[in-house]
Length: 172
Image (cartoon, rainbow, N blue to C red; front, side, top):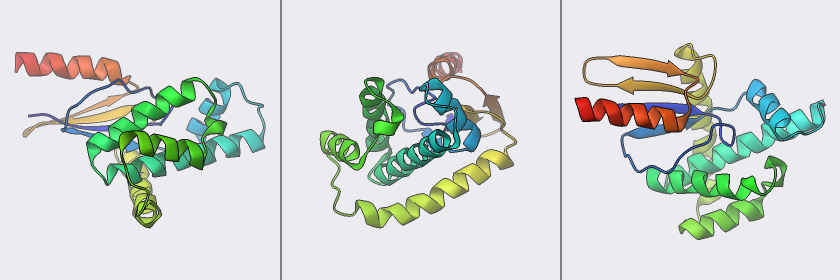
């Protein structure tokens, strides 16, 4: 059995629909990622835009981690819906109202949402620490583990990694 730890930057690293419980998704928020997002969104190349992109990436990541406490399937649904919503707009349009709309669509109660946020903040910091501990330089990055070995893959899109893992499982 394979266990996949997938480090990704929300919005920049596009996720494909999937339903594998052995995937652990870890959002990574860094200034280089915020800069890449700012450039991809064609925003002004200034510190205000950079900070705004970093702030939104952090909010998206924290929201995902909070939703993930309701279950990994809910977390994946949140990310996939968010990708769809942001195809029509920019990351700067991500607001509390957008989050509420997505949460309502996936059936997640917002009653305890802010309480869980502090856990999500600590968890996000630990994920970035693990990302760096594994000497990853770019996202998306993965650790694919079996009982005997661990494979590190860097800069590999989700769809390609999914195909690779499906091929491995077929031949195993």
